[in-house]
Length: 153
Image (cartoon, rainbow, N blue to C red; front, top):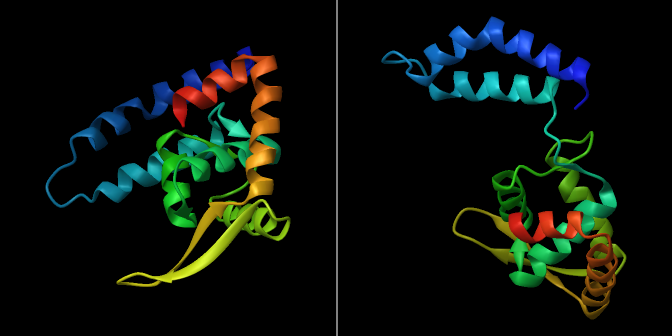
């Protein structure tokens, strides 16, 4: 974030600070979704610095799936916990990336029935494991980015 963006953020926070404080302790009947909506607007105007390129997101997804097979919703939840987003895209773009990774042979998807819906569970293929190993070696050489992934994943 450059200096101009920091100043803009500080000015906005001064303007909306009282609103945030009110939302932190909402009166009875005020839904929590109001606060969530406010935070979404703020995050969209000032994106978090953890926006990843498609290649970086691919590496992170490979790592998460290598640790434990998961469905798309579960993967998105894990990404949200670590505050990772696909740069310039919404959460739905992750499903497109998973489909691309599956069609290129990095992942294998298998439909399973849950109590409420059908889930597509993804697991790493041999090719996906090789890609993860290649990306891990490259990232280890660059250092900082690999450390960030290891701490957050």
